[in-house]
Image: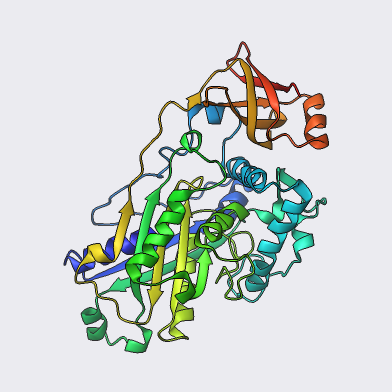
Length: 404
């Protein structure tokens, strides 16, 4: 949604459109309910006009080796990033769990006061990270209450137009909110990234939005950071030097685990909330950070009721290029390696531990293991930094065992 706002602001400036309606929705609650009943309703309709289908936008998010070794969705992928960040900071598991809970507890307070929240219940930091029957580990280090809430029915919409058209339509000028700066960036694939604990492209997008707006982090009155998992928020506030307990708050909605939202349309809600918050504070500035994929792409926007000069669109919006680093991923590997990060995952085949390991030459390999002995070692000792032996089995899977 944030990337589309910038794109169509440019289209309006170029005269390619007078007004644009952006609409997005999530209907996972309905879909899952109907699936459980075995119902397949026919809601097909024919709409006149042209259609530009951009697809799902999944290119570059996963590689065959990652998928093969059970990193098949967002939860295990983000868990790998989260554990890598914990290791980089030198924190043990209980300490890091507490920090995740402390980050997200204020989000629950915002969600509890938001009438559009899927889960308007305030929780303490301890409640968010304490493992129980209702708050199981979904992938180490995430409990259920720390991950995006996907069973929602939610929708939001944004109308974009020029000042002239808005005046013609009779929109009161105290309702005008302007996009002052936007940065868009794509990240490398998981196995190409130099550091699995951070997304520097996302941080660069946020800094570019502020730069184009001519503002700093200190100038922002409100923030909404995409919050599918703690690492998505930590990455941005680490990079922008914002404290986790910043009194301005880090969300306007309550965040994906509590307000709700499993997919990219969440940020349409963030934009709508930012507009309302800034209308109530004329002249103030707000920041919306929108994440996509596996920390794969990011768009950041800076908004205000203060007018923005769009006579030169390139002065308001920028795409940040990146250079791929090919050759880092090894699909099959045999020999010694060092665990860079790990997580646990559960599929129809049962639970397993997944690791990303660095070979002596710097290349990476994914591997997994499901033996009780390895699970026991995982519980007893910190796995990151330990040496493992990799072996490729007859089916082409990389298996690992700890050797120190």
